[in-house]
Image (cartoon, rainbow, N blue to C red; front, side):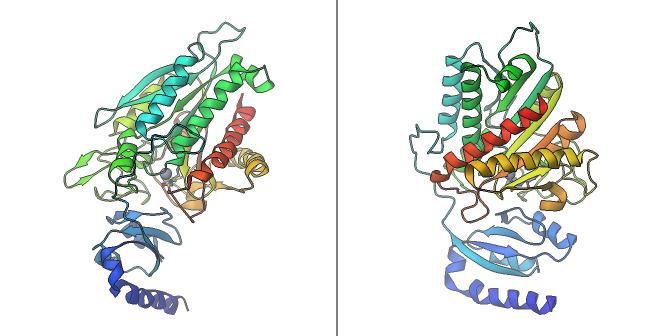
Length: 401
Ligand code: 0X9
Ligand code: ZN
């Protein structure tokens, strides 16, 4: 049964593969790996991952002429759709409305700076890394010193955005979280703002991969990694470069051309090692969220192994509270679970590092949508995605402060 299904898929595809359009067009294919070894073959290939779901099925993007790469995998597959050429530069939008437009790197940096300068007593900026192409990576600290006259608050929470270049909704949500936190601290005192004042500093890294983000605007909308030159290829997947579980359990690739290339060693990239060094100096990191897209998932460690973390119950409990708040405001019911079992094995990730080294409650949120538009989420969905993820942030802070 399973076998004939597989053969039908492959034959079904042959018709499309030999059709004229596919050799000249970009196309999305769905692959059905039957074993860990086949999943690893997909991960090692130079096909661009569309969904990164190297589990029961995964979607890849084939450039014109890349069809032989798909065949070579010898994994059952089916055609999903033709895609617009992602290598066309994006039109320069001159975006000003962060609730309804995507900001390019310069616009994003300018907005973070505008709000920092407008709030000198609340915001502090630190450069935590310099990228391969010499761009700064910044962390913005938001903290209002309260009655308790402490030099450093006892707790810290860290939010990172934009580690994967093409996930444009990430930095867009970062802008909103920053804006809402400033509004909270500037507005009338609330239970949460009081606890924030006395207790906790929040750190936002709005764009952890500025080289990749810029490249996704200028050259290739589907770019994921940073822009490290690797011989004939470019880029390290920064979310495979963290030093916990690095390179283990087929959750990453050693091929430089792969979209999940882990880099030559753990922490080889400035965007990851800079964040690690910066966090070494912070007091008590209790919470962390790394914002990604897409799939509408709230993911807990571990991601490099299927074993459960000792406090999985706490992760699921707070995750479910997030879902309740998010669904109430936006109607999208994100799913909660452990990365390695709900999604797939991913080794060397941000969450495994913050969970294990800092003992933080460390989530990865895969934001909208569930695949209809994927990384190219229409601007009309920016506002609702920002709003529902601000709810998730508040739930985390409520539980941890
Ligand atoms: O593969 C990834 O890095 C993430 N999915 S994505 O489609 N956005 O690339 C999920 C990995 C899980 N992330 C963490 N546990 N940090
Ligand atoms: Zn991602």
